[in-house]
Length: 198
Image (cartoon, rainbow, N blue to C red; front, side, top):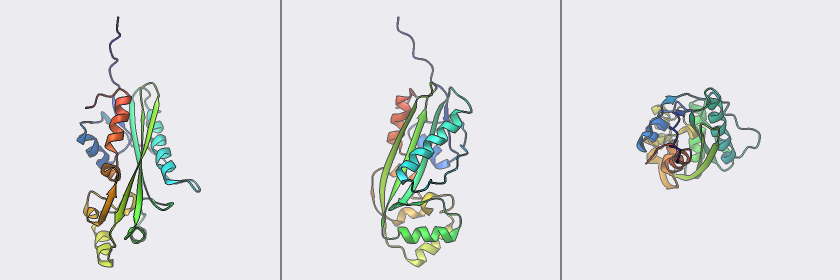
């Protein structure tokens, strides 16, 4: 006799990011719960951007999974890097401007770490890299962007889905990864964990 497939655990998103919630809706996924993870996002000394993205996604998933074992937990983190320099969320407009000057006319990388922990505590992770090239930004463009406040709470001091989309000269890889969640890889991780998805 074949055992029936066990009912899927409720899906918990370990992030309060409205961008990630909207991206999940694009692939027909609506979390049952949203539980932001309280994790220190400070890189360790000489930590590489790819490893940081994976570590933070895993730490967020583990933190939330520990609150209610048995649920399916999805967590993600986005790391922007110019060379080996990690550009986090700027603390103020001055730091945001430094980031924009650094990105102006150059290529940079966006690493998206994704982690899923299923009801049996099996952990699955992926890291996706997208390469983005900005056009050369004028002083006027940078000042106008800073005034828009779109840079606030954004890794690398920009939101590609907003006004800053006009700064992007070239992109190689996953666009939704730069927004905040690589959808193809996320869908595959959820399927592997038994979550019903198209």
